[in-house]
Image (cartoon, rainbow, N blue to C red; front, side):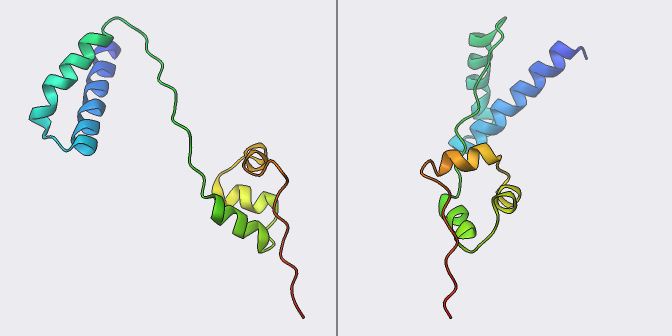
Length: 100
């Protein structure tokens, strides 16, 4: 199978899986929709941007307030340092002071 046919088959399978998973139709019911989508995209190079990532902001804040370093938080939540600062534009939350 050529690369073109392999990538078309992969795209067909991915669209079918998404329709089955997200819409709840059977594979057989999904096929007319998949065929229609592929006809619409035939011969085009399509770029679909990745959706915005949702970050567990409350958990990230809690980790910083518990005293975890920015590097530890970035590693723990798979973030870049730049993204961490974008999440908290007013500055990173400070660790709570220990009483006693």
